[in-house]
Amino acid sequence: MKKKIILFDTTLRDGEQSLKSNLNNKKKIEIALALESMGIDIIEVGFPISSPADYQTSKQISQIIKNSKLCGLARCKEKDIDMVYQSLKNSNNFRIHIFLATSPIHIITKLKTTLNKVIEKISFMIKYARKYTDDIEFSCEDGSRTPINDLCLVVQTAINAGATTINIPDTVGYMFPQEYYNIISYLKKKIDNIDKCIISVHTHNDLGMAVGNAITAINAGARQIEGTINGIGERAGNCALEEVIMALYTRKNINFFTNINYNKIYNTSKIVSRICNIPLSIHKPIVGSNAFSHSSGIHQDGMIKNKKTYEILNPENIGLSKTEFNLTSKSGRAAVKFHMDLMGYKKNTYNINKLYNDFIKLADKKGQIFNYDLESLAFNNEIDNNTDYYSLKYFNVQSNSNISIATLKLTCGKLIKLEAATGLGPVDAIYKTIIRITNYNIKLIKYILIAKNHTEKSIGEVNIKIQYKKKIFNGIGLSKDIIKASVIAIINCLNNIWRSDQVQKNILKNQ
Image 1 (cartoon, rainbow, N blue to C red):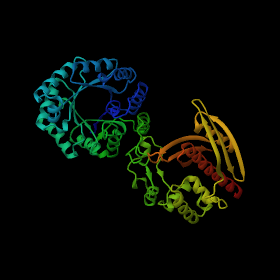
Image 2 (cartoon, helix red, strand yellow; image 1 turned 180 degrees about the vertical axis):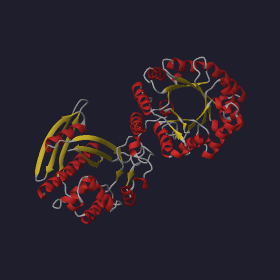
Image 3 (cartoon, one colour; image 1 turned 45 degrees about the horizontal axis):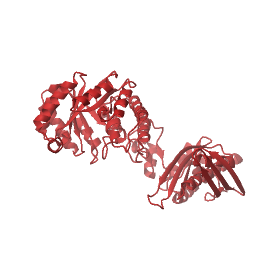
Image 4 (cartoon, rainbow, N blue to C red; image 1 turned 120 degrees about the vertical axis):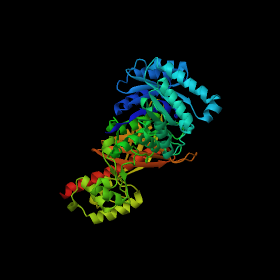
């Protein structure tokens, strides 16, 4: 019979601690709602005693969230415990999470006390908290560096006092998986009444072991995993819950399950990334932009024949629409043909050998190739793909606090056109001026500014995506002046759109 793993999310508490500025009520509520929608079992909403804002936010969230259990953090102090209760008492289901350090380095140098006094305080405070709820979690801060017999005494005391969940944190990310396994296993064997509580683990990623340690702890008998979305948190971060979730889902043979709505994972990850202003690494497992992307020709060929050759997860499971094949000079003939098939072009309508040879030449110059580039190579024999129809002659942008005015002069084939427009900011003004010049019904759907270095001579790179006739076109602009980089990026897109239009005209002409 499969065993349920309880997922305890601390994005709003431990995750927020790592941010340069605190999240406001609205942002925390948005994250809490996303976590509830994703199916997280327990949401740690904050540390209510730490600030009036944290208390108020915890209280507000407790009135909104209905399906996930809410939890607040407290030190081993009556006032902390009282504040957690006051902030969460309106919730249908809440937990008080109490912690105290148990390792020698913390007891001696930070707390300046003894293990016996720590144990006395733990017992008293758990009993004190039970007047508010029977759902008490106790965390042995720095538990992984606590001598095992001392840890047994602490855990035994906490259970006897009434704690129903015992958390053994690897607070500084020090453990290797086998060591962590041994700790959990020893507690399971040594403590007589261990079956009266759920063992939880809270792992940090200082040595890159957070997810591995969490999975190992499950195998040793832990039934609750604490972590954050995207692995955000103190120092190198926490265990990334989405990674644990999908590891358990993918390796079904290990006999565990969660109650997660898997198709909400990607959206929740994006919400946390946006609100916390922490961009995801492209190689971030599960949710990184490269996680379901394939560039090697050998890999792409294998994927076309059978997705399972190089993809152990289905992107649709986490709420992504499809796998991506990056078309580069490393892509093979099979990938080029696959993209042409996706666009609906039959193999007898173009010469695959010529197309592939032209594709390699363009990819060596340009880098990444898009579908509209393939169309242009396949059907635009009279168009030079290195020649631009649109080019910049002159631009000027003036802005104040309310509005911007952009003036652009473009070469459009053999014509030169001059237009101006107003907008809510420089990019909006440029975008509207471009529409006046080209009459293209375009929609700017993505705008990313990247600083290539951090000196006074830094170059700005602007990446944009524009939608035109249900197709997505990409453009890149580079300049020390970010406004000029924006203009160049949009013009880059315009040339791609113009070539795509020429392709469709050529196809219609030859039918």
